[in-house]
Length: 138
Image (cartoon, rainbow, N blue to C red; front, side, top):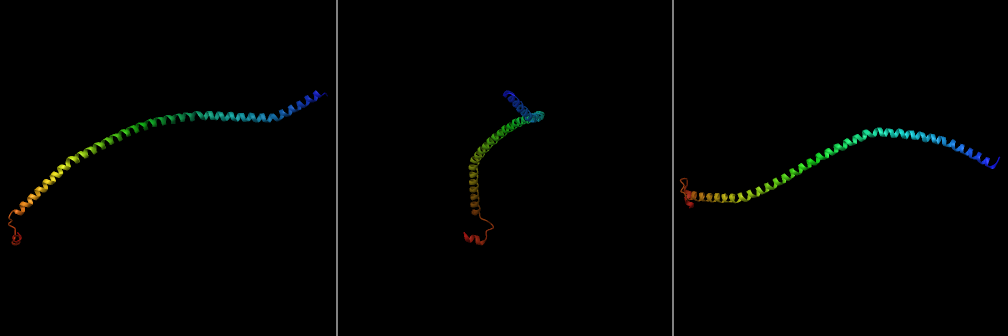
């Protein structure tokens, strides 16, 4: 046998050994690929309903957000109206206070004057009910 024949024989035996070792690895790789394909099909099948639900939730959140923004705008309008009403009430209260206080003071002064005037004339009138002791005091 020539050197080349020994080389071919050794290469053939090595190639057969490599093929024998690679057959189980290739079989395992095939099973892994089949399982991966099954998993991908399951994910694709479950993904459509999930994406539909996510789209529905997104649309509902958009509607709720628009409704919330509308309610916030209405609340801002209510707060502005209440603020203006408070300012008008403060202005009215101040105006009434400034208008009524002098009138009340004048009425109080007139009432006190009439009361003093009435007491003065009441004391100066002779009373039939006066007794002897009242006359002694004068």
